[in-house]
Length: 343
Image (spheres, rainbow, N blue to C red):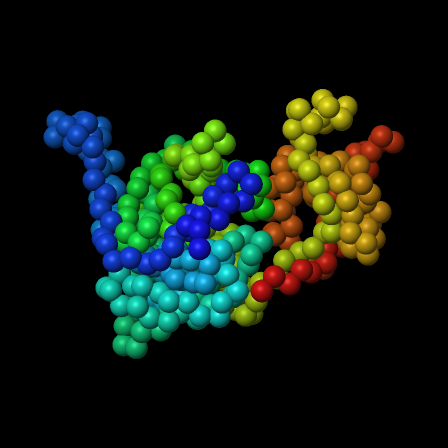
């Protein structure tokens, strides 16, 4: 199987086999010279070293039918998070622990809409090392980011950088609201953790952008699923055995200044409805192609990621108010959300 899965302009960071090497993080000569002189690089270097030492035992390899990836243990009873595209629709996968053990993992649930799967391994008589979970809603652009995973079979490889952006929605990838980082994410890093400087998991690494000029991986353009979103999937799976997602029933495109100019739209951000599914909540509410949606409730909708995130935050059966712009004017439409079973 190919070592990568391409989705439009993005590459899922999926590897092709769990290897046996041990990844190593090391600074370049320039960085080492700074550290020797007691300069500003010393603190950052020591932080990465400490996080790598504390967090690496919680990082695992995951071998699923699509290929190999990484994962992170979040509970000492063996519950771990990885990507859906690593495990696919398998019921069991092979998990490689930091101590060298290879054990079967049971896939408890999955949410393809956000590329998250929840797996559990059981090792009698052992409490497994679990990574602390942070709060991705409090991330700041510029703060430290440390990725650990098993790229190309090189176990627990460490790369570091910063949070380059939040709330990113790469074109061609269905999951919105992603964390962008320049910490390198290699093939095989899929499902592995992105840590902050305190060693808390803030994201689950999922893809790297592709350079359109060379069709190769664009270095420094990696994306991770926010841990709060991944934790929501885990919580639903562990408490109810499945994931419930709200269903709206439209196909849409994002509005940007270029689209607005070409179509002569009155707004430069939001989403434009391209199609409405028959008998869907949107159809019942009277939403039709050509409508511009700029707000759900009190939340502005600037991108498709904003729209998807609002739906994920609301339970099926909830009634939401959509602000709609038409040639006849602006109106507010009530939509009772349906349910889409995803796992």
